[in-house]
Image 1 (cartoon, rainbow, N blue to C red):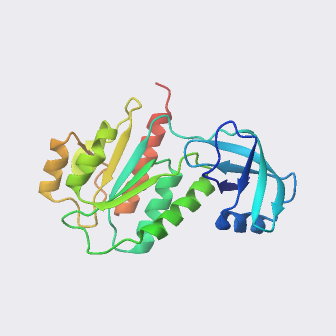
Image 2 (image 1 turned 45 degrees about the vertical axis):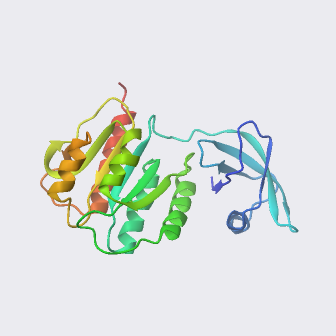
Length: 236
């Protein structure tokens, strides 16, 4: 089943009108007919199945009748990813897409002491997030922050996540935990500076390791988010 992103969707609605031009292009590309069904997500925790009632030409809009909620497969608690900005645009976009598919609620781009001097294209990244939300039938549209410094991350992001896991060689093996909101932090290509590691630890972050193999930033992010997600879904 295909999915459309409809921020106007509210709980308890019987009908919802879609007038966003990008989503209308998606409807036309799908060649939807009256009575056919799609998933609708508002990106704020609601995912439903709905059937197409009609498509209006002027002004352009599509009317859907809401049939009922859909299970979204969202994790039981929020997880987030803080990632040092990757120099190559394709690699950064890949990491962001996969993070969304793996269930993150927030993505924080970090400008660390060893981050390459590049400026990420935030609007393009948000478009990638939107596509991944629809692909994965996510009920939540992840927030995108940054780039920000490690100090700013500690101040603004840490309070929402009691557990903070920092990718660092020599850290402890990643283990399963009871479900609490979790922030996964992955450094840039040049790794964290010693001062940043100390700052993160002073703010309650735990160093973790994925073993002796040296991984790219986006690989470490994807692997860790997958492991954290699996741990959160295990029966307690």
